[in-house]
Amino acid sequence: MITKKGWASKFMISAYKKETAYDAGVTMSAANAYSMKGFSAEVDWDDKVVTDKDDITGTEEGTDQELVEQGLKIAYKETNAKPNSVIAMAGLVGGSITSTQDGALIAYKHKVVRVALGTAIPSIQAEALIGDLQYAFKGVKGSRFKLSGEASGMVSLEADLIGSGTRAISTTSFVAAVTESWLKMRDCKVWMESGNAISISPALVQAAEDISSGTPRALGVRLKSFSFEFDNAGEKQVGSGGGGVGQDYDYGRRKSALAINLLYNDSTELGDFINQNPLAVEFDLKGAGPIAQGGTLYYGVQLIIPRTKLKKAPWPKGAANDILTCDLDIEVFEDGTNPPFILEGYNAKAAYLVA
Image 1 (spheres, rainbow, N blue to C red):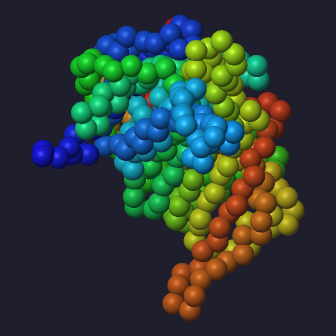
Image 2: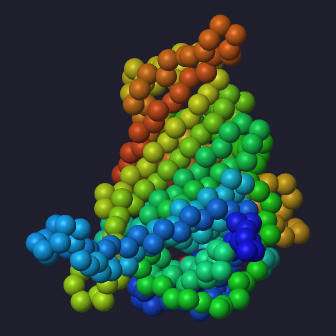
Image 3: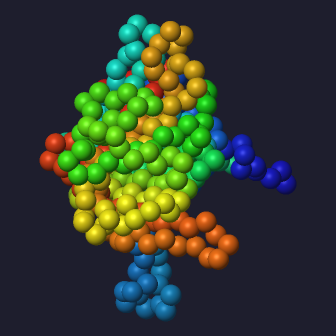
């Protein structure tokens, strides 16, 4: 027996082109799709089977079983995330992405926010190879994405994808992966602003704070770790007459979550909790060297959460020989003007999820 190796697995998504209609599929060409590198993708055929074990059949164990509904869930992860993957997955889950070119250069910024209520999020095609199984999956939408990082480490990306269940054996060649530098926490600037000084810039500037009309708290030297998550709380819509696959995917009541662990400094954050001060938070990762020579954009990602409040007292913690830290357990809200999160990614790709 020749064993199959996990490192030989492949995965690609049509991140640059969305389906024209749900479950219509996309041609997996280099213009429309890219392959992942440095990833894990757990593919789960989330199928529904029905048996007659609870019916009267004259037999103790029942007599039959049928497959009545096909499903798909994919748990995707990059421990060393790249801008391209963050933009693609955040765009799939948030649903709204606007791309702007840096002059005439091959350098772009991509702004991702949550779509307006009642607006559908895009769907794509995905393809996976593991062992000797290669399948194409249609009607794939984003359910959840998460960014996290620890001091002196890399930024990690997680995303949950849900497909219609439409699948077919494929022999399509996998397109090339995108080569980009990893997002490093050493490049991450972190700011927090409170109260009336919160002011979100309409046009974000890399490596400059974009959340304050004054001088916000710089938290970079104190940051131990962070995680931000946006969840669509959605589910596949099967309905009737769909032939056993999903006919759409709709989000529920969407929500965000933010957690930060800091070196304890003073009672400032405790005061934010006691006074229930509104807080804006910004994470700014700007890489070294411009995307295009002579340009103003650098590979990277910015994440802004315009309105939050602490939902638990950030009491300092640590044993006798520890440096004290504090956990900021943060509730995300809407401020009536800005979306609950703003993510901008910067790279050499022109556009994502185009029609």
